[in-house]
Length: 218
Image (spheres, helix red, strand yellow):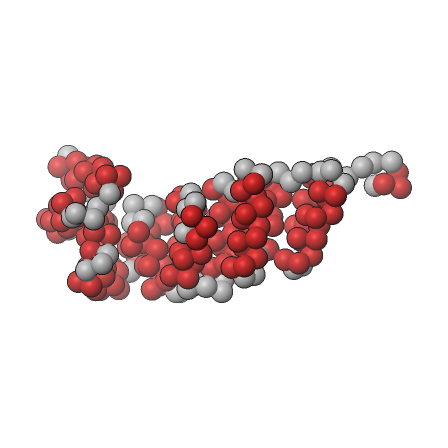
């Protein structure tokens, strides 16, 4: 391009990064493009996120993209998906909440679906525990009711995550049209002292659907 007088732009550099076979090569392209005065965009950020291989690499690129205000939902979907390949769900959550700024919760659907697809059910359920209302979570609850019920009851009885497990159990039973059980568990979640206002609002919405005769059955 330069031989023909055409200066590479952000699309060119991002495409090169996408073709890079390793994280280190993709990161080197980021450095080179910035040396030439070209700033990354959302596509560049997502491309680099998809190349990470370790939590340290993920933290480095997250910090840089946050400075550029490019660490949005799609960026986090890509980076969580990349990290999921080598991390347990708990380790993934530990990384996601590190740095003190949290992450866009919608992005958690991608690793839930990935763990489910790869048969890592317990890892999928660990994430479902916190976000049972997402569609990816409901798919897990629909397809694995026995395993989900066992996992969530153990979490409830352990105590520290009872407010999460009770809400997830309520949604599990909604998915299988066990209305009475669903209502009982959602009431437990609503009244639990550890439930946040946002979670209570969600539980109240689910209870309202039950009162209106909502059913998962066709």
